[in-house]
Length: 277
Image 1 (tube, rainbow, N blue to C red):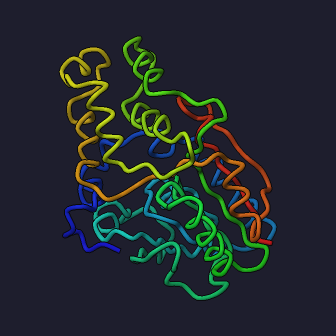
Image 2 (image 1 turned 30 degrees about the horizontal axis):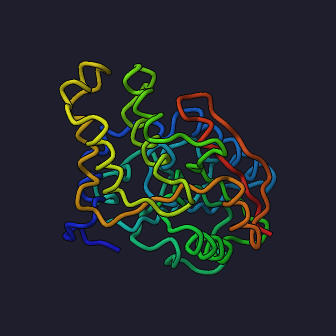
Image 3 (image 1 turned 135 degrees about the vertical axis):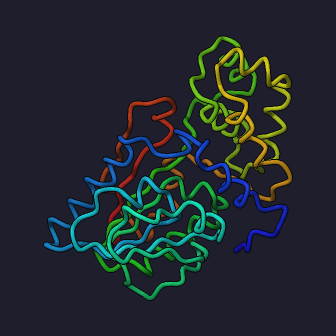
């Protein structure tokens, strides 16, 4: 947990630049629609709005079309993200956001009917934290509860950094945020956590001249500067394959369906709907 004063924690910097972050790091309308349909299906079957847990403070999910009667609580480890990113309007009536760790949620047993999140597992260490995360979600979800997560998952056939560099020079990478994720996943060949400082270092080696990169791609200097959130950070990301996540969650959750979106890197960002066993 952070109070925003630790220079090795990049979340306060990330919160300040949140408006510059785009897909696939943030959900597209198609991703949000997947979550809306899943939650609406639960509500229709139950005949009421859900008690809902939002993992993180993703504005697109906080303000999505929630069923009438939804009670929403968001949990994020960063006070800065809560203060600067959690929407002040557009959420269900009475929605709250609290600071806490996802592997030790500040919530009672069976407190929720549904839990949703956007890319949340990528912030956890694989595999140990994934199993703890699944167990904690199972604790706070009522029996038969629903879990809906968009994942960031590596593919069986993986790129190298050289592959990414060639695609960049050829103008075949559409957004800077897709570039960051392609670099990160290229650094993840053995399903180990990737320190974000390594992502920044690999970017520096690939594109040392930011003015050249901006001319090549039309990405703004401010957008490119979001990579600087990673400098000096102690954070590491994980990008296990979907099958590996399924295995880590299997003791507590069964996959109901896997949904894909048609956008750049959409094949690496599936939305998965699980049912609590």
